[in-house]
Length: 189
Picture (cartoon, rainbow, N blue to C red):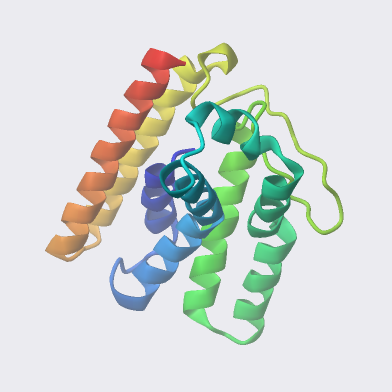
């Protein structure tokens, strides 16, 4: 899924109330599995000047990049974080780890041909889902409307829980970003 969708869904699922440390924990957990991709792709594209086709056609699938993705997308790493949060009764850690695990589960189900090795350090196996959130050759025309609906419902749930106006604006921007990105995926892929 796209990161804006993860932010909306993770916050709706785990940020109750959607304020303060709990909201920040849900957002951090929802975003962290994608941060390494943004950093490595950003440096490659904008600092090193590597062409987009090389970054997303070769580097993304390289063993070096997949190793980084394996660590920050590991069910075991995030599960350990959740265990620590429960053991030590640290609610923000529980919320963040839960949002991270939800992110991983959604990615596990919706990455066809571009999944990540989510069972590090025990396995480098990658599940090749028959369904994709972006690739129309793998049912994205069916997935995108469902994903957008879930994002809109997530926004409404957050709104009803009494978000601050700044959070309302932020999540409205995330919803708009999700609509725009989903449109781009469907038009071009």
